[in-house]
Image (cartoon, rainbow, N blue to C red; front, side, top):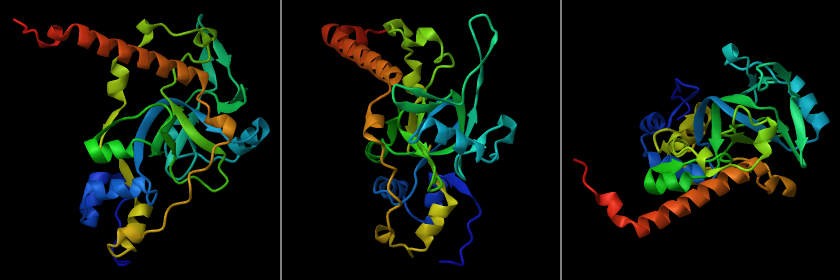
Length: 264
């Protein structure tokens, strides 16, 4: 099928399925088997880059980055599809400008300053939920760059970062009142919200329909043992959400009639 032309660099999975004459779940299954990239589209998502290198190497790597197609945002191309804008200028509590370093070493983790992510980022978890339920709730450690260069030190994108996460009060414990239920809904995606690259569509076409014979993609870069630990800020968010969920379940068990009252 080499004579078939692909008119897009990337597209939503529904269009790709129509183009390939297959079903959405067929493509999701290939993503689950690490044969193609299944991506989400980010637009100015507050986030940090988690690196697998030293501070010096991270700084050197940054100087090699080219501008991405999100030029209006001043973003850099992490890959052909993933972009990141380093926001090194922030405001303190008195609205005075603060200049932050591009990268910091935080308890053994080399992470970037708070920035904004654009473009396609590969979904590495929750694909089974999309296949089984057609809905998934993604958290702050679910995505990595889409098709990064072989020498890229970026191992993960940490999303859902507060604009003031660098402030000193961020290190304090979160109160339950800080939890916003809307966050869960903003992280909700369906099986039609993910994207596929034209490169992967070409690989599928070259299989002549026998997609199960496709070779796997390069393995997702292994994270050093120290990086497998959840960052403290993210861990506190997860702990608070878990406690609130448990409290909600307990309340429903103790007061079941509350959920069935009629409103007049």
